[in-house]
Amino acid sequence: MSKPLAALLLFGMALTAGPAQAAEKVTLQLKWVTQAQFAGYFVAKEKGFYEAEGLDVTINPGGPDIAPAQVLAGGGADVIVDWMPSALAAREKGVALVNVAQPYKRSGMMLTCRADSGVKSPADLKGRTLGVWFSGNEYPFLAWMAKLGLKTDGSAAGVKVLKQGFNVDPLLQRQADCISTMSYNEYWQVVDGGLKPDDLVVFRYEDQGVATLEDGLYVDGKNLADPAFVARMAKFVKASMKGWAYARDNADEAAEITLEADASGAQTEAHQKRMMGEVAKLLADGAGALDEADYKRTVATLLSAGGDAPVITKEPTGAFTHAVTDAAK
Image 1 (cartoon, rainbow, N blue to C red):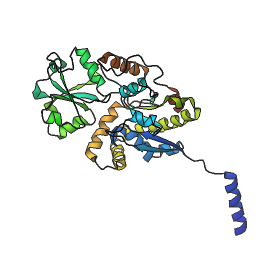
Image 2 (cartoon, rainbow, N blue to C red):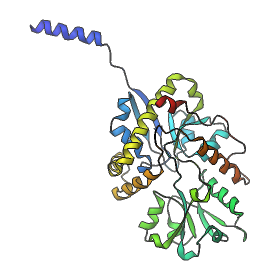
Image 3 (cartoon, rainbow, N blue to C red):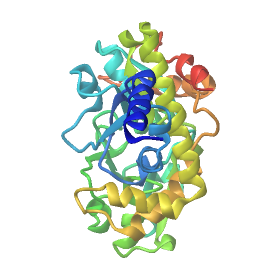
Image 4 (cartoon, one colour):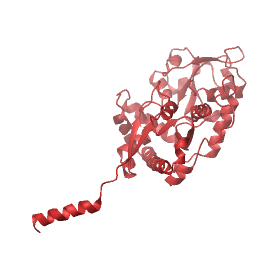
């Protein structure tokens, strides 16, 4: 074949093929800094699962000064990772957050106590100083204390609440008898700080009947009226759950992928691998559809917390949908 004829044929093929379809952009806002808590999303990006769905996904890390709900409301993200207590609180205040998927099935929240403090059971918490996270993360704790009949005003009949920062120093330095920890993160920081597992008494919120859902995927409910947006989120959720399944089955590799994505360089390989191993125990299977029974349990827990400034004052309506996960199947 002559060169002019070959060139003509190639030109004709290019015309008939048409322009390549551009990837659909999705921005995900994380609840916290880059770590294995979010490994499924980084794996989905690294392994090309998003690309295979025709998506171009940007993953923005969170931090102590970043409120995912505010980022979403301001148009800075298409979808966010948030805990249901803070999501429902934001919803009641006017931010139309809707849960579209729930990759985490179980809660990793715990209260970790020094064994030498004398705390051996929940009954021993009376009169103790307890480290508690705020910004919406305190509500499971308040519900638990209400269930135990313990006031949180520091009175002799209750407990003293120490507003806990983003470290475990209050326990290591004996400023508190117990502190808030996650099974995959702060608990191991305590161990790395010099206290052995035998030196600790741990109460899992799930075992106390006050567990709430964590690390769900939320969007602005107004966008769900757009079928194109629902289709785009279905692709995102499908690829993300594929990423989570891969991360669960390949924990060390998932931790390494997450570590490479961490621009801060603040994480260590050993901690991330250990974190991913613990995160794997909390994950849901399948398409990541929210279990309505888990949702109802979370709402009941939040409503039981009461207090002067409850996270929610009434039963939410329209706070979740299965439309996205149904489409992802």
